[in-house]
Image (cartoon, rainbow, N blue to C red; front, top):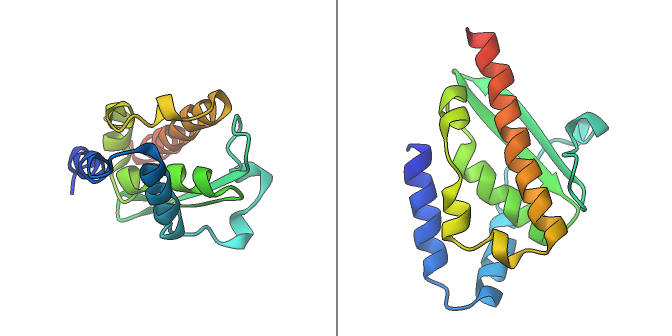
Length: 140
């Protein structure tokens, strides 16, 4: 499935909920299904800078695709990173680099987050794309 198709699927899922309390509950559920990072990768090197909560992300190449795992010490933040990992994990680095993130605006996520969480969201996206740039450089 392409990044675009996954993003459209996420937008469709969020549109099923009438209000933001239901959407937050759904994000918390998504966080519970997150591919968890191994404890050995919960290091300062893997913490996303700019997040109020602690968010660890690990990336590794598998068959020319990046597989992401993550965890957070906050349930909403865990849901946010789960959405991003669902969209970007198991994709080619160049596809991640080229992907837009307008689906975040389409589900209304950024406007329903506190300013510090919204900044954290931007930092998470930036970090996933930086991993993609690093792996794409290795492929070339």
